[in-house]
Length: 268
Image (cartoon, rainbow, N blue to C red; front, side, top):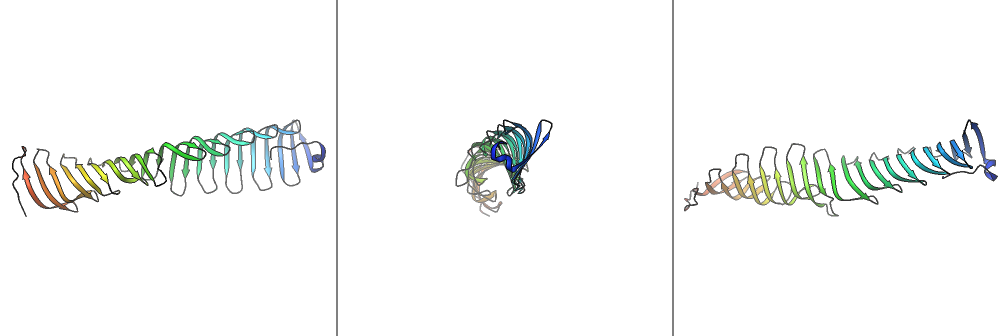
């Protein structure tokens, strides 16, 4: 409802009370208005109540919501922000009936421009630029376990960026559904560095691992532990090959000195 004229036939359905320069109007139980008028239209500050229990309080411009205003409904929806010619356009904060909320810019009631959206069901917060309700480009997404900065995921959940975890560890590279997947580098909170092609969040092919003591492994990781045939280099330059199972050395196949002399094989 943009406005009501107080002349002609509408006068038959209205009861108008004068309070200084403000009017209070009731219209056939459909709505009530208390506020200022100009030329027979809502103009200035007023409060408009509908029979569905929704309420708008804010500014009007010749019958249209215009300027700052707040609207709330019985379902739990709330909008606080700017209006332009009757439409929700400008800076706003919105609370949705399902518990989600958004703070940022909107156009015609749709997220458009920079804003922050919180999704109650996943407890994730999305920050970035929106175009007609869709988030795209560089974004920041925060959950209870991690904070992601990078490209917005495509239709398959694939993206590229940085993940900072709550335990202090960090990952940079390819992700799918915000899990490590593809080429990337992971630094654990204990100082272990893992680079390679991630099959999923815990398994890595063609991995290069350097622990906090400077020991390097080359091979495959399962559950972030050496698995199968691995090449190892110690901080003093000595190298050996070995077979690992669940992170434990099963056999050392060869030992090389620092100058890569002919290896001496040991089987045990």
